[in-house]
Image (cartoon, rainbow, N blue to C red):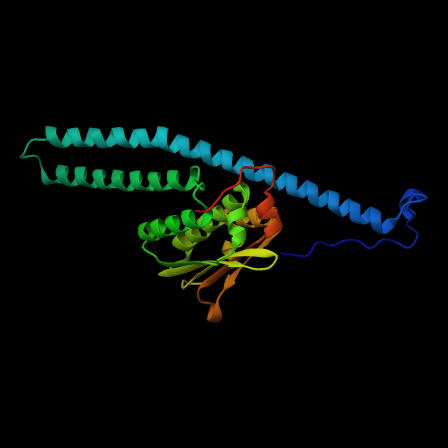
Length: 270
């Protein structure tokens, strides 16, 4: 992308006196620090609202997929089953092949719909993030045909995660593995949680074809980055040695994870 041209200011440009010097009695450093703190608080608030809106959209989509598309697919499967009973035994082979093809296509669509409902719907984290994440990774790996490993650091702070914090980590892990299955052409992916002094890191490493520039601005990456940044962290992603495989690291600040973006019910891990 070309660098935008910014015309230099001419030497005779002047600014209003109110912008040239701080008001009497003001402390510039303190005012700047206060402004930065206020801006950071506002960004955190907006990030929290954005993530809440995202979860609301996910719940709505899951409901529509389950009650709308799911019901229609079920009705279509029953209709095809009835047709198979009505066809005479001497019906042309092409009819039976077409019926079988339609049935298999419907089965594929129904399975895809169930996966979407499971991924978009509410997440049960009452039993703790670690257990929920381990179970989901194992289930997803079986459905996607991936070999997976999951390791989590033993850290008491994992018991103090707020509901929004635990959900943010879970959603990033979901999207990371979904990207592996969709784009990486990988056979295996390892996931682990590392507990640093100030940040928790969720790390996912696969053995696929590597990370390309075409994936850098996808919706999934934007969502993962937004969740990490909303909790005082960030997202790093790139190819491994020799351009093979992809390594994703999502960092979350402990103080934000345990406090949550807003007052929230605590989640415990049994």
